[in-house]
Image (cartoon, rainbow, N blue to C red; front, side, top):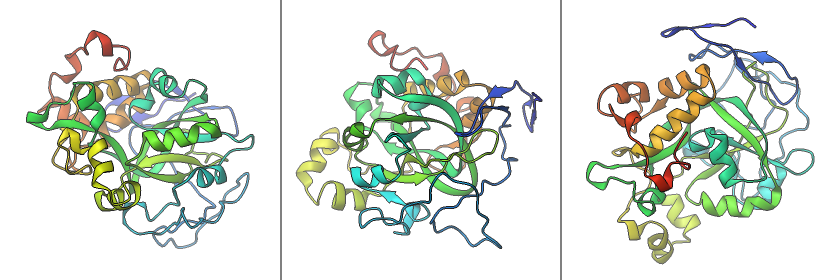
Length: 311
């Protein structure tokens, strides 16, 4: 195994990672030098000179009425999944659904606390997305770790971004777990994506990622235009806007995500620091922790939350 040098950090250790197909070791530097993945999907992407194809276990099913690709906005480049039936259409052989973890689910312990029966937890890469702290999360208010005065109550989401690539985790859940998954991640847009191994080989099965939604769509479609539903989920925490760019990471949550990424190895750690952004889409987490967010990594969670936010 040959270690590659990070352009800013210098040489780092090798990390084990495979695609769904071959079991092999590979490296991924924190930058973006991995060759572009070649996908055989029915997706609307930016025009390319000659769209290539790649081997896949089965073709991408056409979007259903509730899984329309090309709806516009941030979700328009990838098929959107809106119902358990849509999720079933992207299931792997055997009926399991692949899920992408990019924040707290970088931690296998956190992932198993949410999905006790998950299988195949592994490191992967997701091309064409960036991580952004621009999502007001009610769970932080429920757990008493939101700091409203300084607007430190954001969790992570991802959004399509040409030229970006993030190191993530992928694992499989049972199809019967999908309704609870949809309910728990009520405010997100579910997109079908194709991760790849750190060796650059695309996975043979699609996976689901929780991406940025919009307040207008959320209120209309998920809350069915009901202020009562919205207030039950958000209004009671004085959150009148979910997707916003003027908030900062919840301190304990950010610490947890950084530690989880670090536990996955140097490539995942550096990628998280350098390809995760504040709501301004300019300030990286590495820069934030060295300036305004200095001291966050030294803060310990309350005793009751040490396991949940321990990385």
